[in-house]
Image 1 (cartoon, protein in one colour):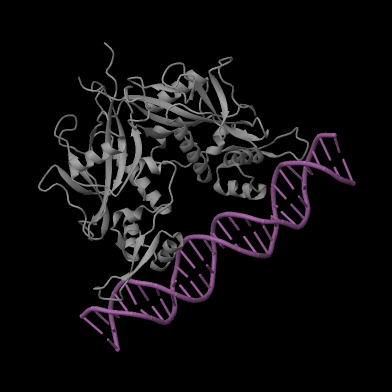
Image 2: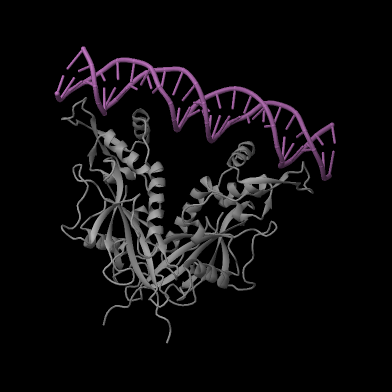
Length: 234
Length: 234
DNA sequence: TCAAAAGTGTTTGAATTACACCCATGT
DNA sequence: ACATGGGTGTAATTCAAACACTTTTGA
């Protein structure tokens, strides 16, 4: 009897910004789901699952993302296909090849998005303070973090974390949270203005206890060869 | 009866440098194989095939690469997983999800590598002058070209096109062929030296009709989070 | 009037580019 | 000697960082 063919699954590393439990500053968080069966029963794992027969890969990522976390991404991009035969750590198990996406979800009017109410098996974790993960999911998260931080420096994905309209200070706070270091407000302003990625709305944000900052909205963007088919444009 | 599960395949876009038919200058070429069955019988396509049950993804890429073109890569990296349900252009056909790699093969002592002798169904094509390709393989090749040219500017993959020992002029010729424009020899030299990616061997290349150039070998490299498992280091 | 963040200007040094020039070899 | 590419020097330019300074609001 021939060995069964490898099974295809789609998983997603989802990033959002929320205040850190410890410092209170904005920090990267990712939602994980608790496994309810072997192997790795009880461990935390990336949301995902099998690919439907007539479903695009990115649609499968969106579907599992919505089912398990009740979230819709503002950015979605394929990360990598993980398919080492040893990755389930059980030689007898059916081999699974996971096509992994990474996603960003926006804050809604300044608040980080919630998850399915009251489900104790879905939970946000600080991306720099994760528990032990099932399978090779720790490797996957580390790679997704590296891609996010690398891409932040030459791309416009920061906009996907915040709403349509924002101040430059809010945008800077996103960059600082993702990169993990403070940025000079003056130089950040010039860097963003030189990139032509934002346009002023003409309005200002009132209600602050200091000078009202101008509001901006992002102006759409450059594209890579695959963006029209496979990614949500930044 | 449920629809059959999607089938996994692995294909590879293989790049090498050989003199252009038209200009005689070095230009990027890729080997293609002619399909011997429907769909797209007679069309040119990327080398590839199904994934064996106990085989790593990159090993499958290497195996198909060797079987169909008799080549071994000096660089191999995963490109993208293509899985749109429509990509076979035949709704009744079994759905195929292709995990595509891209590879570089070196010139052997200044000559571009050969293919399987006398096989009329494997042939090199100029990457900027391709025939119509089967399936979505044209999209895939365009994306691989974009990745190669982008990565050339911040990485060290040029070394993979040439042998262990080379002159800076040879390395520059690789960059010029891939990027498609001339580079200043003086500035190229400084750029490479500043990157610490090469070390002089102490030898020079004799037999030229001008001043003998120094020979270099490349000094290994920085790594990305996945390189130790999934890629051949540059 | 003071604090606090918004926003502007200026200086500095590093990195990139352009190009003039000298060097070593075969013919 | 001279043609040819190897290799070095240097000035001009662009770009990023550091930081002093002015502006506008709420309290």
